[in-house]
Length: 108
Length: 119
Image 1: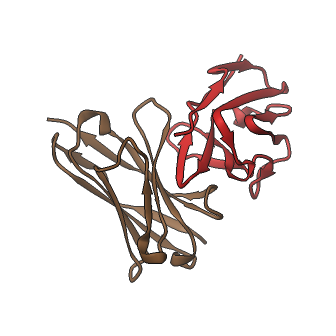
Image 2 (image 1 turned 120 degrees about the vertical axis):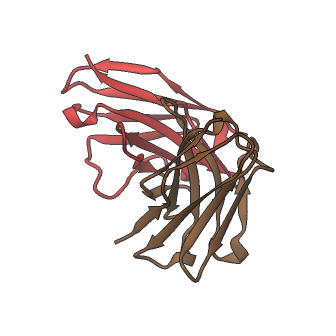
């Protein structure tokens, strides 16, 4: 089973700053099957990025994804108040999926 | 529009089973995979498994849950089901169904079903 490790666990930033979130896999992941989600309290997750770098429908362009192999990054440029939330990476391969442990982006 | 409507909250005793349903509408049910994901209180997301609503309802489960989880579908009602047996307190969580567009991207999510396991 592929283990995804996200870092940092918590990111304390101010609105307008840039957030850089890391997702490291225990073995190589197909870029086609790496996704990022945002979750706010009491809500289901929302898909932000799929295929490692493609924004989902309706996602603002301040969100971007990059990476390949075992190292992936989610970048949020110019944080807006509504961006403070928990972010998860997820992979799917060999008919199995896993999620990372999450990164909480909080207001500094 | 795509909608996934899940069954209501459940309270179960340890050792019992729970069956959560997810009724899909607004798209061709057999054309898209459905995943199940759970989230224990205050914890992260855990992938549970996937079902192909066509192809005889082929499934794949997380190794941790293999043997306790069963996912099925009813194409006549566009509904998928997730049954979890031999419940223990650690199974207390919100359970989500989620539809993918390709196979891996979980685009549409149900509202979640809280399952509480308590004696």
